[in-house]
Image (tube, rainbow, N blue to C red; front, side, top):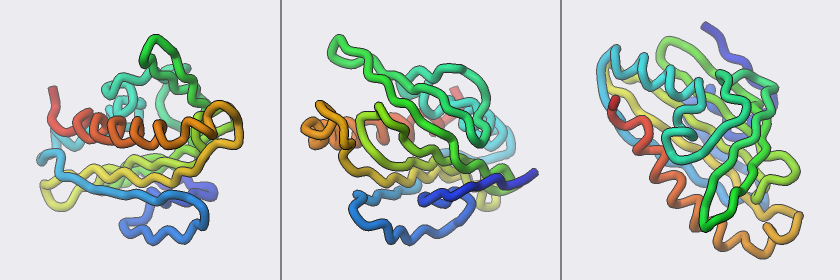
Length: 168
């Protein structure tokens, strides 16, 4: 299997991450999500088919597997509104012990930044890491709603971790 990376600030192919990007709120967290080959295969399949997003209440269009250069629109329905989040996949890693991808936001997204979702297998144990770089969008009304969007980000991350925690 192989790594395919362009310029990714969240570096999904690297096991360590020391962001030095000025102006972005940097965030990263890893949690244990399970163990064993069956759980690993299921989690990898879910991750590379956008399951981390769709199992968290988002919709991804088109619904095709993650590939570098892909520009899907992620959407979420909240408070009677549908929010569109255009993104571009900029890095994919797919090795025996590390699987993941990163996307950057595109114009029209409520925030500006990058997000990475990474599965790592350590012996039989499986960990999910999320890395994020975020700053306000330059577009209105998103710029003034940025503090509210950061709160929504916390909720979304909690849902991401639950999405792949146990095979169901």
